[in-house]
Length: 93
Image 1 (cartoon, helix red, strand yellow):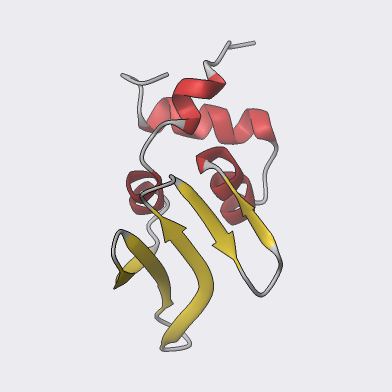
Image 2 (cartoon, one colour):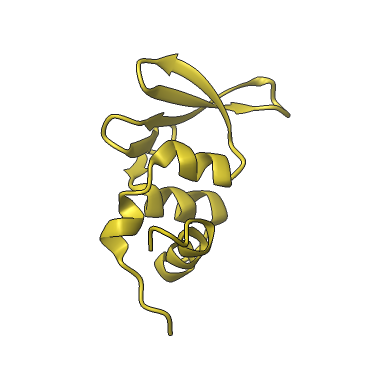
């Protein structure tokens, strides 16, 4: 089993992680990004905060780090999220 530096993975900029997840981002405030749902043609309740490198989904009361964002979007385990980020950002893991 591959070992991960979870702290280094959590430190990956959340906006870069969202882009790897192919989320459609819209600037909604200073260093704050909302996620646009193209199918619904509206903003979702998912918001990314670059300054603190965290996300929050207001409609579900969920929030967290880059790892939590991947687990949320891919509906996967911590290990699977770490592997996704490690593969997506090999120089940082």
